[in-house]
Structure formats: C-alpha cells, structure tokens
Image (cartoon, rainbow, N blue to C red; front, side, top):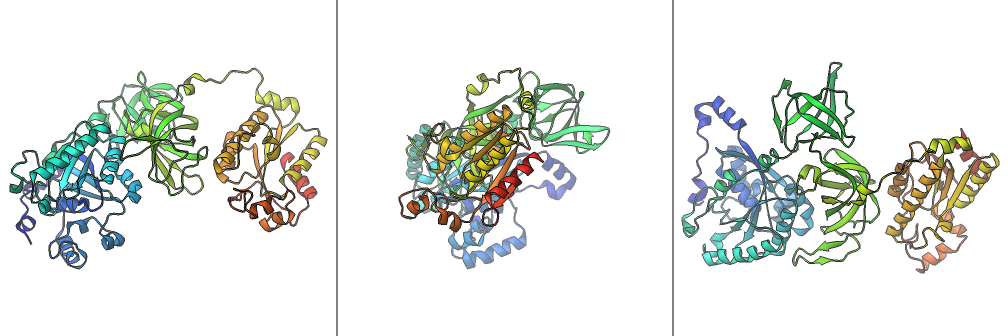
Length: 637
C-alpha cells in the first residue's frame, strides 16, 4: 500500500480531543455545502468520494477493515484499497464496477460540513443524476485524463447548468495514468472551455487530481508542481454556498402545515426558501392575497428574533387569515406571481414517452395541482446544443414545452428561486415521478384573460329547470352498449320533464372533434374538449350524458376534476372483450384484427377499466332497459 494511502497528510480536527463541548458548539455553527460528483462512466467519481471520506477520518476501524477485505475480494485496484467500495453499496454496483443509484455521504473538515452525492455516469441513469443535482450548491465534474471530454461529460455539464449550479469544478482525474503530463491537462481544459461557453457556463475551476493516489485532494501534490491552484478540499471549504445568496432575496415560505397544538396557538409551519422574517413584518398570503403582520416566529418551542433561509419555523399572524398547506407566505410589498400557464424546461425521466395533453400531477414546493403538457417546442441535442423538432419527450430527453395547470400556482422563475421554480410531474395512475422541470416564465395570456362576471348564475339556470346539473359519463369498449343505454336513459329523463343533452362519441367527431384522429394524444384531446363542453352545459343547468370509449383513467379523472364535486357520475358499461367483439355491430373489430384499423381499443390500444365507478352495468346479466331504469333511479334519488 502506498504512503499516500496509509499516511494521509490532511490534518483532522484537534479540538475534539481537547474540549468536546467547544468542538460540538463549533461543529453546530459550521456552514453546510452540498455538492455532487458527476461525469461519464469510470471517471472515478466513487473513488474520489471514498478518498475524501478516508482522508477526513470519517471511516470507523471496522469499516476500514471491511473495506480492506472487500477490496481484495471485489476491488479493482489489486491489493490496494478500492475507495469506490465505500460508496458503491448495491450488489449490482459492485458486480459491474459502476454507480447505479445516487449515494449520499456526509463528512466534515475543520471549516465546513459536507453532503456529497455520488451520481451515476451511465446515460440510462441520468434521471438519478438529476435527483442528486437538484439540491447541490456545487458540482465536481470528473474527466478521465486518458479519455478527455465525453458525451456524458457534456450531458451532465448541461444538466448542472440547467438546474442552476453556478459553482463547477472540472476535476481532471487519473493524472497518475498519464504521467502527470501538463499538456494533457491543458488540452482537456481547452476543450471543455469551448464547450462550457457554448452552453452558458462562464467560469469554472479546473484542477488535476488522482482520486486513487490522493494528488491535490487534501494536500498539494509534488507530482504536479506546475499546478498553482487550490486543492479540492481547500476549494470546497471556501466556495460560497447558495444559502448565503438565498438569505439576501425577498422572504418566501411555502406552508407545509397548519400548527394548532391547542386552542391558544395557531401558526403556519414551513421551511423558509429565501429571505428572512421577524415579528412586525407585513406579509401577504398567496394566492389569496390576504395580508397581515407577523407576531411570532417560533422554532423548537422558543421564539426567534429573526429567521432566515434554510430554517424551519412556525409563523404566527396578528389576524385570522385563511392560510393552509400549499399557500406561500411572502413580503406584503414584494410578493411572487401566481399563474396557470407557463413555458418550462422539462427533463423526461420515465421509460414511457410523454403523452401531450395528458394530465399529470405537478408538485412545486408544497403545492400539488393537475397539469397538462403540450407537445414540446423543441428538444436539445446535448452534444451539439441544437434545438430539434419533436412530437414528444423520450427517456432522458430535455425539451422546452408549454404547460397549463388547473388552477393558479404561486411561482418564481427557476433562475430566481429553485423552490418556487422547480417542479416534478407525477403519473396519476402509477404515482411514478415521470419528469423534473423548471418554470421559465408565465405566459401572459394567463394574466390577461379574466372571467367575465355574469348576472345569471349556474344555480339560477338549474333552478329555472327545477333540476340538479349532472354528467353521466358512459365508458366501455366499442360495442359494449354505451350509446344504446345512454339513449334509453335520456328518453326516460325527458319523459320525466328533465332537461338533458346527449354527447355521443361518433356524433361529436363529425363536428367539434373532426380534426382529431385516434392516436393516444388525439384521444386525450378528444376527451378534454368533450369535458369542457360538458362543464359548460352543467353551468347551463343541464343533465349531460356522454357515450365515449374514453379508454384512459387519467382523462376520465381530468373531466371529473373539471366539474363541481358530486356532479360527475362514471357509468361503466362492463362488457367483456369477447362479447363486444362477437356483437361487432360496425365491423370494427374485424378490421382491427385484419390490421386495417390501427390504435383500436382492446386490440392494439389499451382500455383502463374504472376502479370505482358510481355505476357498473354488466350487460351479460342485465338488459339495457333494466340498466337504464337503475341509472335514472340513482341519478334522481
């Protein structure tokens, strides 16, 4: 084992042995730096972190013994310690010698505390890299001195710049394998500088290192006498952290929960995103716009004279202001915006491509809303920085698109606030996180289009018809009997003097939706338009019946969310595929089986059956007449 490994030069804290109380007090007040290591496969990210942990004395004796044993069994450094094994904990990572998931490690020096995220280099795990980078103040981008700037180096650099990491270290690693040749280092720095400027990275710190040998990690290396810059640890200890910048910005605190431990206390708890707050400050609650004054700032059972960005606190108001989870507390004279339409940069993280028009959950700070994303304006080729046309976003694609939320959200552009500008998209059916995104700006039409005040309300429309508005949403396979039963229901309601309107799938496609085909995207837009029409008809006081296959749960849920609670009734016409195909009134199944009809539900396009419909009709055991009678009875009580 080399001297550089057995005798690390870095001097650890001596105060811990002299005065433990003083050490703990000093440790409590150290600043925290979050950083990531990223780059291409085998550039030495895990080894570098292992070296940092080792040299900062953050490894216990039993861990060191296990590391030495594991290094001999599965290590890649012969009989020497394989520092990567300190970070690569998954069995698959050790077997393949690669990082798959993000590994977080803590260590500290005399001057600062650190949380480092070891991000995977493989392109297929780019989504994991985004996770680690989302909270980082600094990125260490490693480059193998033998290979130079690679595709994944460019991808990770672009992503780091995209999500707002301003402090970038270009660590040219494995210099020991190129004989510590300065010309190799200078050539790589020159290549990277050209690329960095092309994507907007103006400054970065370059340093020659060897994670395995320890060169320029914690102490200057004699092997690179030509390098006059700081060591990696020196740079990490002195670089400015984002929290100090956040403290200078206007006060913003997303509310996580309402703190009501007893009848005499009511406060609003959350993590301060930016700025500071103190008793006496005039605040505004968004999106409602209600104002008040701060009376107390409380944390851990004690009052604070002032709280700053990064602290979790409970704020009390002088007035009884309506405020709950998802609201944002801000300065009264400098509040953020609220809007419902945006341009955003999106990194797609799911194996299944984005479906334009589909509704996803959008989570931003403590706000959760339903959002639809349009087809991207363009996607970015990270190798050439070209803006390419695309109809959707595939796995790991980075694109710019417009999105709309079902209600206004409080936000700031991501360049101003990570907390109020960064979001994730979640699939409503699987609950899988499918994308991460950054809001660039709101679309002005979201601010210039206003609701016109009308004298006749929806309640007045309904009262004049002596009925309660409702939507009966008939869904099922083609040939299940949706239109037949819906037509019978409308006849019965009409005979009872009810005001109704039936929107049939085929009929709507002759006019309103004649420009739409039968792709997944077009079907989603078909249902969205019908849902909007149904909502307008309920505003007019009508009972609306719709007969559509509407194969996707997410879109049926989208329509439900458009309507007043209790007005949407999902009617599942549950006919087995074999029975629907046996009937085949229009001959559509036969054409689909012959390959003459593409994207046909039940054959080459899926149907997602309702999980909890208000009414289920089994057409193999109940006649259409009986089903219609039951539906009318349910609707009218």
